[in-house]
Image (cartoon, rainbow, N blue to C red; front, side, top):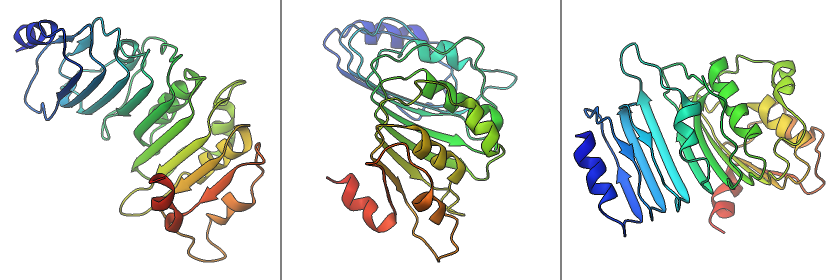
Length: 242
């Protein structure tokens, strides 16, 4: 179905919003391109051998890949290069597969808002996250959904991934915990608080359980910004509905 779908998209010059959802059984081998497309949602059960052509007006991209095809490995460096000019990017990497960056990630000059769903129990997923953050110097908002809990990397490893100028404009981070264990990447959150000089708000979707709760570390850790604050579950809904 690749060529017919590509022809429909290219033959619709006024198309501004495109959603390709629930493509669980479709290996469509499609190049997605459109001159006036502003918003794209691509949700596929498999990588589907899709790629991006000319999308000069694209502002918002949502990409969700659940699995790779057998013996296949999608190069996210090549994949994301086609949407590197967007202002808002949502990227859900495969929860049960390794991720691969064969090519250097592009620079996301315009990116202001990034939403990720990722594993913290796999080094390659953590490295992909840092690569995205290093490539997005103008990023202001970061939302992260934890797919699988437990950090496989210690503070020293995380700190070594931080480079000069990284998250220089980051102001807001929202962390959505693992739904079963409500696990949170505390070391990563402390790193952001201690490094991001323009940071304003870290919000997490769990409450403090006791005085001994590890989340208390977020309230007492060193902060690079005097304006930085930490909001817990009771304040989360009010804050994000402003």
